[in-house]
Amino acid sequence: MDKLVTRLLSDLSAHPPDLLIVESNLVSSTEKGLNLWMDPRVFTWFSTRYDQRPLNPMGGHFILHARRDSKLEARMKAETGTLKIE
Image 1 (tube, rainbow, N blue to C red):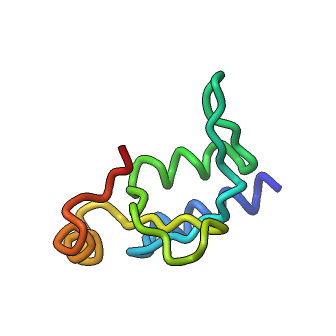
Image 2: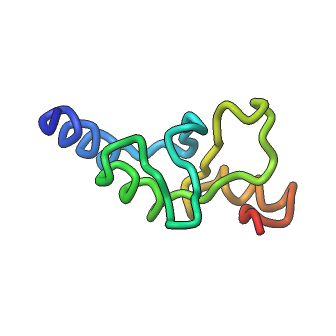
C-alpha cells in the first residue's frame, strides 16, 4: 500500500489536475476533529493545494476541489465570489 501512495503522490505532484473529485464519506468532521478514511499523506497533499467548491452539482456524494491559483479556480471565483464554505 505504501508503494501505491508514494506513486500516487508522485504522479499528482508531477501533473496536478485543476479539479479533484473526492468521495464525501472519505473525510468527515466530528467534535474531535477530522475523520480520514484515506492515507493522511494523500489528505495533506490535496488539502494544502486545493479548495473545496461551495456548490456541489453531484448531490453530496462527491466533493469538488479546485487547485489553488489555477484558471479553473479563477473561473469558479468569478461565478460564485468565493470557494470557501463558511
